[in-house]
Image (cartoon, rainbow, N blue to C red; front, side, top):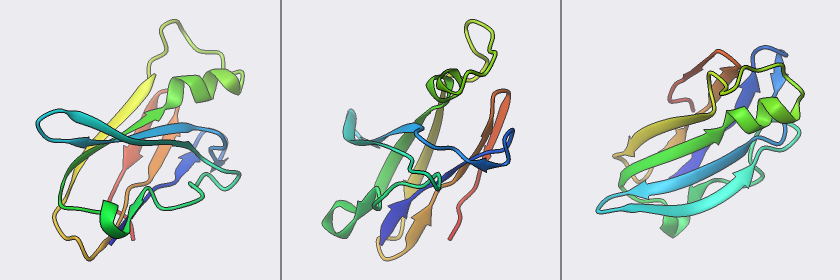
Length: 115
């Protein structure tokens, strides 16, 4: 199996470029597995988890939306309505593709399990 994501900026109607993402494994604590940023297509250049690293368990993706919108020059209140968007999810099948996309604007977001 593998874990992937992508981010679409619904306010602009295009991929969110340069949005920082952190991935954590949850358990007895909160273990940071990686930090990356989206490319020009709003995707990560490689799967966030695959091969031996892809395992059953609970995870957390942290999307740094406030920083992304500030870098774009978006006129945001202080503090911004959305700063870090946290998505907690579980991997129950180690042989499947888990795709967790984020559709984001300064005042709302949605996600789903994609393919």
